[in-house]
Figure 1 (cartoon, rainbow over the protein chains, first blue to last red):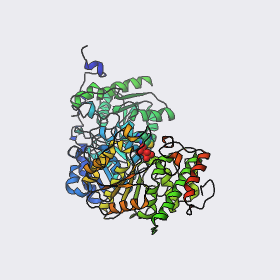
Figure 2: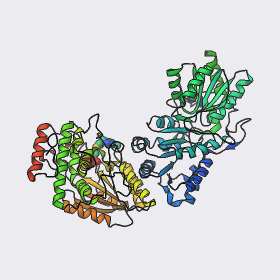
Figure 3: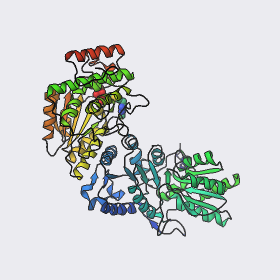
Figure 4: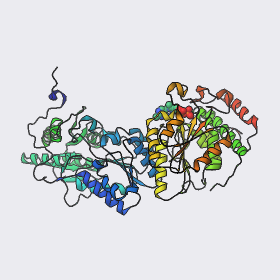
Length: 338
Length: 290
Ligand SMILES: Cc1ncc(C[n+]2csc(CCOP(=O)(O)OP(=O)(O)O)c2C)c(N)n1
């Protein structure tokens, strides 16, 4: 039987592939969340001698190599042994260090889930897992390297804070905030360059959604690289006379339930958008709050219970329904439901 | 800081006391893991009452030696040693596994003073111990880190990841003790998963290997002291032991890996252990054993 990509992926309803990572006006500038992480970590290392960094043979990709070059004695290369990396980080944290452990998101969470649970979450230790290569925008490496379960896994762990970063400015502020926060944190960054959402500042506060656009017909709640796409969708919708609020819900846990309730009450319909499986990610946790406190119609943009494939990031985002147009379609549906 | 310098025969008395508690606690709880607790009682007594630099009145003392019970199911032997050291009242031991007790089925570092790591999912303790040793080195502290491994536990791949890392980072402050009681849950280790040549494996991973009779107090002390002299590499003491050691009917009896003795069995076991020489250390009445 001939294999068809169309059987495998959810066909995007639209032929519009404007949703490339290159973005469209006004989100022109492309930035790297990983570089921002590497630079900020280096700064933090200069400010606080308790910051230590662990890697699993990917420090060139995670950009922690910058820190390693200046502070070799505080950088621990653990080799391709992620479980041991997390356990070692736990031991360092129990003796007062602030360990940042980095690798690709899929290995940082799927390979190490029990270590995250027993060695970090249960004893509530001050370990920061900062993972690059979140989602399917990893691209050509394919499913083995796509992290689409990571948010669900880490959100399921008591004591963990879970953050999905939208752009470089936010990465910078997030890394500073999580270094100050006491307790386990998971941060997801992206591999490709992403459109800048924030220019001068992002005013990042853990657990506080950022309202990027005001509107009254419906709200898009997005995080990660879907934030810039949500803004594009809102522009497209406004051209058709639909007024949309856009929230950057960078912190999935603890969720800013007030912002969610306010969106439900103030706009009467919600679409979530995430580069993650629909099970257990942003959409799931938002819908929990909505159904408990203020039921309104919802739609969910995300990956639908399947693994993706190799391809260019832009192609995959189209193939798996993560374009601005997908958000537009979902939003029109949900407005019709009101 | 404890400056107890107990003699080997006094330490044997402490080990008997720990064994009485293990049997009494698990029998009272009606569940738990007595077998692997009893096999480790002599080593744990040597550590808590002679080797470890620790201060039960100041469990967070930054320069203390750390002890990580990687085989967390042996919680009863750890709890008994902590109580007998004075971290908390002995009476708490007999609340083991009860809903309102800080003595969880497996150790929880957040609930009980003196517990250095939350364990119970096997294979994770050596990594944690390595992290503690790395932190100590960065801070210029000279504390040592001891970690107790089960022989079944070393089936876990993470143990060998950590073994590699400890020698890569030349963690000479790390001493692992491997409770070589030759049994796990499904049977003898040789039948479940072959480990031999076990000492050679650790040597090949860059460790200094010491072997000892894990029930001979003088030999245990000698091995632990020798480990302190090793420079530039981690050391492991392979302690040859008998699972269920102390009560004849529990020895090498797989049933007592994860089931408690009945009340009758408890009386019999306590009788055997105490008959050797009355345990003087422990003043509690029933449900305490002495
Ligand atoms: C990761 C994990 N898998 C399985 C278990 C269940 N389990 C508890 S004890 C045990 C056997 C341990 O054998 P060993 O390490 O030799 O301990 P000992 O015989 O000294 O009690 C197993 C399989 C566990 N606690 N953790």
